[in-house]
Figure 1 (spheres, rainbow, N blue to C red):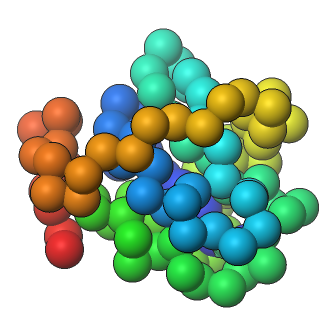
Figure 2: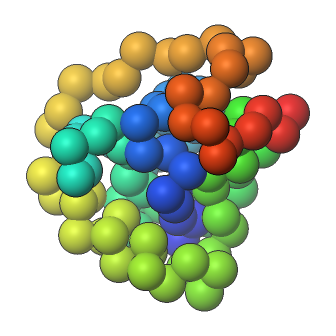
Length: 104
Ligand code: SF4
């Protein structure tokens, strides 16, 4: 069961997760007109390293935790894969969306 990035990442993209992923499974791109990141389910080895790195808690540990976004991650992965890396935002940078809160 791969890890999944959910709607909290839309318009945020801290990209701290991609920095720690040992298999380069996390890729940035645009979804519904906003910056987003996706986890490629075919590459993810479910190590769990990325989950605590997201400052707003936008990663869940299983497709069962977010089936809708698991589908979106899988659909976007092929097109996001070849995109250049996103610049990393500091973990204490305040979220851009009013509904998001720093969790670490
Ligand atoms: S769980 Fe591990 S392999 Fe999967 S995306 Fe996160 S850091 Fe990468």
